[in-house]
Image (cartoon, rainbow, N blue to C red; front, side):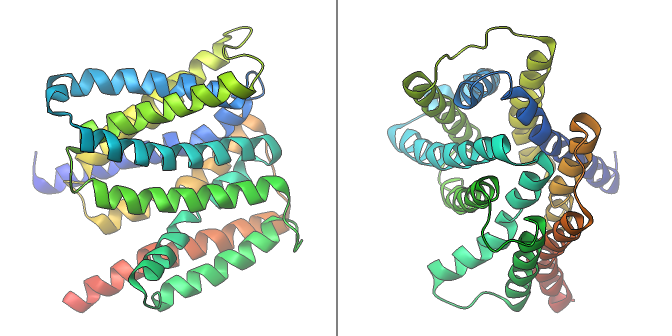
Length: 295
């Protein structure tokens, strides 16, 4: 297989990851109507942990205290992002939560600028402005956001924190072992919260939809997605990968309509488009500018 063929195949695999991520919003929304939120997260991430454990089994002897510590920190950030996202799905449409979650692409440059103590790039500021107007329209033109909107934005904030922490810790450890500890930590955190605050951990009935849901969310949207993202990005460019991943909120809207029959108002779709435009500006344009400058 030629290098170009490998690149195209890697792009295709990354797009399948985006499809699985996009599909999880409506699938999770339908699942938490059948069982408690944190119980669902606990089972989902325990299944993903088992899959990842089988992958890292031959490396497990290399695990150490520092890796475990950093993996737990990453797991805490990831747990908070999934907790706020999943609870947001109780109160808001999967389509809305999908676009609000995508705001992490806009937030990351802002947080990075705060840490580095310098103004964010012009495209990042422009992306924030577009996204802010988009949120206003997506929320129905209300200055006072509803509960689901607020939770979705907080989710995006914790995803941004998780991205920055991952960038730091992934350079210090074996990325597969680190992710295994991280995912297992999310499973433990979710299970503890469920056992303390929810009426039951297991659903009264494991129907076909729940089995399908755990297959998609745990195996494909977590274990498969991580493996493909790690391997495929070796064969394609960061710009193309970033552009492919920005399609996640769009696929969330498509699956929200196909599976859940979700339809937004024209103002809502306009707001979603503005958020997506802000995401593209914050993620894609700065990369293209750097590429042009090198030419």
